[in-house]
Amino acid sequence: MKKQNPSQTKPKTVSHPPLLFFAGAAVALVYGLITSYEMRWLCDDIFITFRYVENWLSGNGIVYNVGEYVEGYTHFLWMCLIALFELLGSQPDEIVKLLGLCSFAGILLVFIAISWRTTQKPDLVVPLTALLLAFNFDFKIWATSGLETSLFTFLVSASLFSLCLWNSRPERALVVSGLLLVLALMTRPDGIIMYAAAGLFVALRSYVQDARWKHLIRSLVLSEVLFSSSTFLILFGSICTMATSSLIHIMQKAAGSAIIVRDSITSGYIFNRIFLHSHCLRVLRSFLFY
Image (tube, rainbow, N blue to C red; front, side):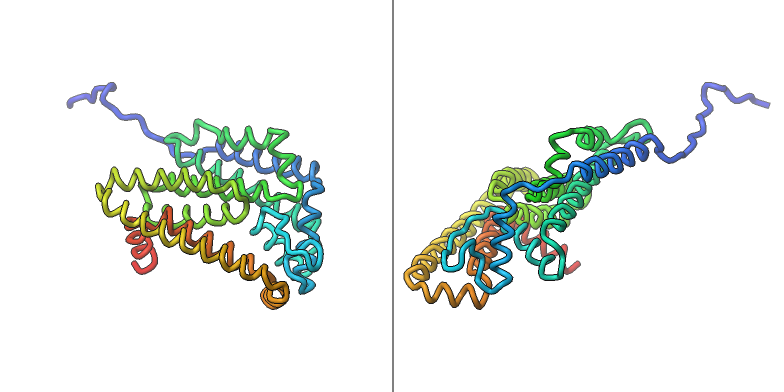
């Protein structure tokens, strides 16, 4: 009987849950949320938004003072969320803290997910980024504050995580990332920087993978023309509207504010300008219908 060489025997692999990773994720979430809740506060700037929301829900339009049509806020989507929850009966000073903490938890979950997907041996690693954020004082102090900081960070982080899934699920990765960046842009104007960087990444990678550079350029030029034309029409309409104060009053009393239409159209054309080129249109079609 031939004896088996011990050097040729394969060791048995014992599958066990990555307890170290799960423990690190739990510490990041529990400690981060508890300490962020203990440090909750409201910045004085958010009370400007509260006044805009109060006038909006009262039927006076999105104005700080009734009759003075000045856009004194920079977080359109955040203001809409506050107005929605206040309309449902929530107190604005409490709901902004809750939304901030939920966004903070979402950020930690995103980086935990990134750590999980980017490692080949999760039983030997911990979600280091999430842990560092959970122990960072400056990051936690802005988890609440009443401002849109946490929501904006969550949307940008989630969009980048979606782009990381390009190789495995390219269709949904592009669509989800584009929509998240539209929401980030509507949350904060400097989201355009992240949007431009992601758009450049999408364009270059599409060129490398599909080698349809000319077709991509034609699509982007068409989107640029549409975006520029819509911006001109919006500005022209705003000038004509400002010439008749009664028309402004009617529009804002009837629809809340024409700013909603302007921001929605602008964000939609920016989405079309950067993401919906020929490759993404094909991806969107397959994502929706197949």
